[in-house]
Length: 485
Image (tube, rainbow, N blue to C red; front, side, top):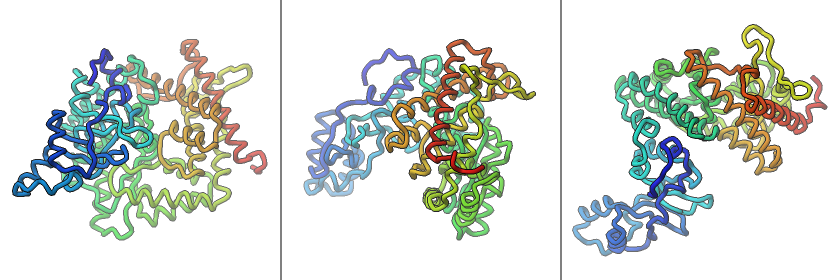
């Protein structure tokens, strides 16, 4: 691990390939365990990455050799690495961030990761000791503290320090996209830890044939600060009445616990604790068919809330079944895409002639611009709609825009403009929420353009132009001018 002069916060946002051990010490699967042991002794290491065509396929550790010695009666000559290695390697891409590696190690209870390039070839190894040795205070310790928390009360205390971590990271120059991704990782980590605690301490668990789903920004993995809970649940058709009761108990307790640690309930009650958002697979398919086949009014609102769902805990095969059905159903419903697109473009970004930023005149946000309504909603929903058309059902809005560019749906220039607009709006929203929390207010979405610096005001203006550009693209893509109202 090279010495680093980076601050802890900056280090958190370094790419893995700047801190990993490279090259990794490797061996093929067909060498003898004796030769492998000699290589480990020569290199003074406790493990080897087993490779095939430069791609990692397994791990051989000192423990594997020890277990073999204990069970083989000393007859080691007939064993190759392939006979005792652990098949499969948990890896991280070289352009991933340090914080992603730390979370992946914690989730999988491992101490090292293979670092791979885009061709899935091994380029190095990163281990927990290397990463954790760089930290001396809370930002990098937060995940360890969260994983070690013995009670939900402890998690509530840790949650309060995440704001300090976000402020520090912003001060250190962390880019908006990676910071939002970091917050999403922490939010999911809190949910996972709560699930473990209520199971271990209270005996409340989710049945094997069920899945707890995150919706909205959490489903996309792009939360800012503590947004409202948006969740749902799906379970197998053959679930028993007792297991159905377990689903309800699990949902109720998890929603309560999340609220306790500081994640507010959804004001619209779009949560797994609400029976309307908790159904069997077949029931969900029937509901989705109705939303998709009649894409108007409340159906579009409900589908928009549900669309970016992701399994946080439970049986992921149920999620895959839902995604498969949604894609097939939307493809055979010709009116679906233009109807949803028409709803998205109904509200252009608030930009007047000569680039004047138009503010709201109602009582609630008088003199302000609601960043979510002004553009964040249009970009997230528009990207999700275009992505669904191409069977892209995962990823952040940034990810989807990049994939749409790769598929030729968006030009490189358009994709960059829209991504920049989204980044600016999310950054302003994050700054606003931090400011609100520092003032003891509930974090909101409305910003007063007159209170922004000239630079920030110009960034907002350019972002709104980018939003309107995206709306024009959506309008042209679905030929909405030829569809009667």
